[in-house]
Image 1: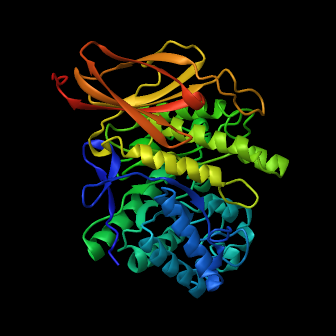
Image 2: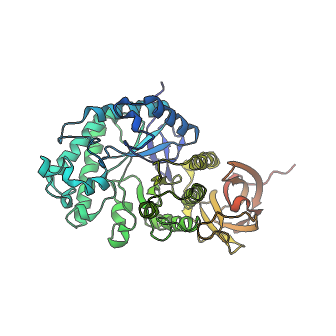
Length: 469
């Protein structure tokens, strides 16, 4: 079986490529050791079911899963117990998952701890000093020297056993980092990232002569309470930025399927404002968390599918890498078939852009549109652009949008003069059609009808001049 190449960032563009120089985009969602799609791998209870699921993911355009090394909602999925004794059944789980992901060309964004349940069930966790662990308080997870040593040892074990594989896309050094786990001080967060980043990079270089990309994730609302922009977006030892898109009035408890997309576009735009020029950005966790917790129930499936699709396209078109990574928030805790179709249709669109040369800037507020009821999400440079348009007027509380197919004209700035191929992509059917337009003015103007109440456009320069026959 051919080995998966490693993923890396690009020197002159804010996206990802593999070692062969081919475009690669993270399309996926969060998964976990105990959730239905992967649980059959633990103790090898149903390996065939898990393999079938991974094959299904690949067939639907999924390229990446974000997974925590352990999941401590219960007592049976700790990676270490006691600290330093790595659990055989968990090692077997990850051995098997890496083999299967290699087979189906899936990659993993790996984070070392399930910090949500670790915090809520701290009295049970092996790292707690009361249980023989190194840390006296969850307020010192990121600053306690003995705990830092244990975390480094955990990373060392993982790097040595699985770090040589291209299945490992990247490291999320800590899930939802924040000062509450560093004695309330921001300085401790910088020290933690410095130490863990250096440890991983040096260990990987010593073993493999190369390194996997690194990021650290944050709960987006926390950034409004603390000045974390430099840490999350600009830390010199991180390779890309990731935040978790939770917003109280739109994403967390959606009352329609349009407002969450608008919030997503605004959050991507804000992130790109803080980023170094060629650093990728992605939302690595989002979903209707408050609705799920308060209602103890799923969003209606058709509504949730549209909410998912809208957030996905708003993320990509605003300048994010891929469509963002949903936390399921459903019973059972898996994505719907409609969400998988949306991922497949996104994967088809990705082939229309050369991401490794795309020096995107956010254009959400620069693209002109003639219809006031349409929200525009876009990014571009002087040769390419990605645009997604969403009609808002029929999105009302808890209702599914009706089709109106309005005519619309947009004006796209910054594109150099030349001949462009404009591909119109139906996000529901996953099909597109293209036309060629010559452009020599300040803006490329495009007129069309909006199908399905939204449409994606891929714009790419194909020649300096229009062909004359």
